[in-house]
Image (tube, rainbow, N blue to C red):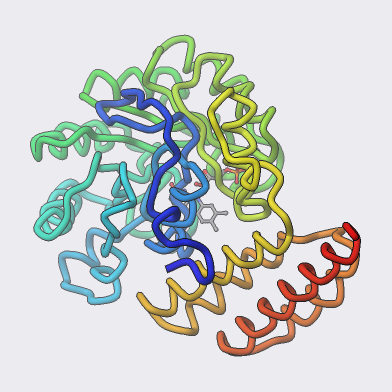
Length: 348
Ligand SMILES: Cc1cc2nc3c(=O)[nH]c(=O)nc-3n(C[C@H](O)[C@H](O)[C@H](O)COP(=O)(O)O)c2cc1C
């Protein structure tokens, strides 16, 4: 449910032609990135509503799935409208990876199975997973080979490799494509950069030229031009990550620039409409998970949204200080009322 917004329109993807990328029919090449702790089902639904052509789960621990960890299992409760949905897994060895994938597939189907070879966080590296796999291309290749046997397209998310890695980015892509990877998204930062510095767009352009149709782009996508540039230079798709957290409407605005048929209210959303949608997403999170997660995630979006809008600064301060989903939701109502009254007054 999306608050006061018509929920059927929420469920309806934008009416655009599909395209096949990496063995998956996507609605368009603008995709929601995998974001740990964020891209849970209601958030993915929110972005499908905003026009994302495909959505990713957050990275899911195969070891957690194998142990029957309830929390990990709960991350896998997709809504039927979240299509196409790519499941992103992480593991440090082939057996755990394949076991985890098999467990995930017992209850749900996915458009593709993804392997995270990009995460630079110590708790993931310690398990030999994420970007640790870039140090061991033989293992990365074996993972692709074995996962493919489950009959799904295998998608990878890697980072640009650095001096300490055995293969440069292009050679690594070559190995992975030869092993049967159907799609590779490259984040143009090396693992040691984590999220600092600038993402190297040239490394991604180069791979897109070398492997046409296989390469998606990730890194520093903060405005429509950042995304369009990647597509113009041959990338098959672009992932929206931190840019979409700051401004979720970046997705429909970019679609509109690409010539897609996008509703006006999505391109120039009133602040009230944004608040309404955000509240609806929070309610969806509360219903599906709990009030605490709704509060955390809606605050995460609020920390980037509505900046510089006259009269909203005080609300933004209050959002940060408010505790509990009910209080936050009430404050979003107040913001919406305030904006509606202001807009009515201004237009009289
Ligand atoms: C909070 C957060 C969580 C992330 N979680 C994942 C993840 O689960 N899997 C993954 O492959 N990348 C993950 N990433 C990386 C993003 O998908 C993306 O590649 C990265 O943020 C670069 O894009 P940007 O500079 O446009 O934000 C995460 C990034 C952030 C900021």
